[in-house]
Amino acid sequence: IGETLRQLRSGKGNTQLELAKAVDVSVKTVKHWESDINDPDYYRRLQLTIFFVVTASENNAADSTGFLSDKIGDNMMLMLHPFPQIRE
Image (spheres, rainbow, N blue to C red):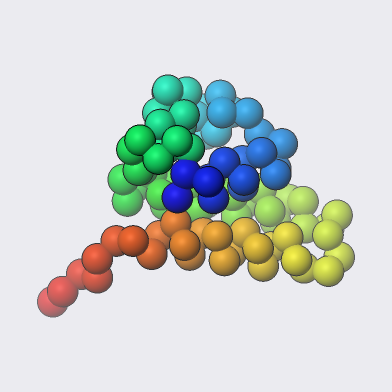
């Protein structure tokens, strides 16, 4: 998850501080996520997904091929995937 998160963040031109503020965590926490020291919990993963999807939709006009939004969508699914399914 760390490398995916770093690529998404830097690809959008965001600093670790900007991302930390957006999801209400410390810069140290973002550094730990990007270094695979810790993983974001499910709630933070949802916040990250929303942050990057909104950022992608804001910039989608600059990418007429749709590649940017497809790439972000794929990466967000990878970020959410590691959680176990909820059993009824």
